[in-house]
Length: 235
Image 1 (tube, helix red, strand yellow):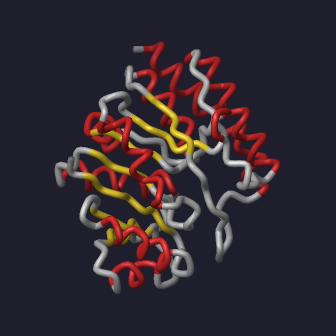
Image 2 (image 1 turned 180 degrees about the vertical axis):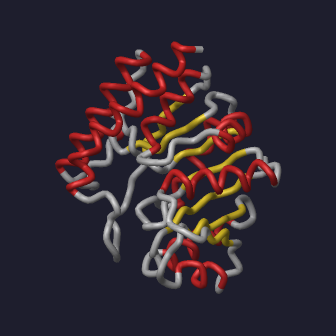
C-alpha cells in the first residue's frame, strides 16, 4: 500500500531534524512530505537538506490548510494511505505501524493515535490543564452528536485510507480542524478507530495552542459542530 506521511510544520527548524531523521529510517515503507505553512525560519531548507519533498505555502494558512494541502498532494499522487504527523516532534514515528494497522486490515477508514485509552493510556504525557478541558469538551460534544466516544479528539497523529483522504482533499476544516473533521467522517459513514500510542514533549519552540486559544477552543468547536449539523439538516 502506497503510504505518505504528511508533516505540517510552522517554524519548526529546531524540531524537524530529529523527526525527519527518524522518519527516514522508514523510507523503505513510507514516503514523507513536509508542508511548510509559511514559516519564517529554515523549516523548508531543513527538509530539503534531507531530500524530503516540501510544499511551501506562501502564507500561514493554519494547521487545517497545511494538512489539506498534504491531502491534495496525496490524492493527486494516488497514495492509498496518509498519516498526519505533527512537525513539533511530539509524535514518535515508532508508532507508525500501529496507527496504520487498522487501515491495512480494513477495520477503519481513520485511525487515531490516542494518549487516553483506558487499556493503555500514556501516563507519562502531561497535558496542559486548559487543553485537557478543551479535549474533554470536544469529546462530549462529539458524543452527543454521534453517540461515539473518542478519547483523543485533538490528536494530530492520524491515518486515513484512500476514501477518507480524497474526501478531505476536497473539504476540510481550517481552524482547529481535528474534532470537526471527526464529525465530518461520522456524518459520511466512515469508520474511526483509536489506537493507543505514547507521545513526547516538544523539545524546542512554542506550541501554537496557547492557553488563550485553549480557553476559546470549546466555543470554536461548538460553533463548528453546529455549522456542520445545520448544514447536514438543510440538505
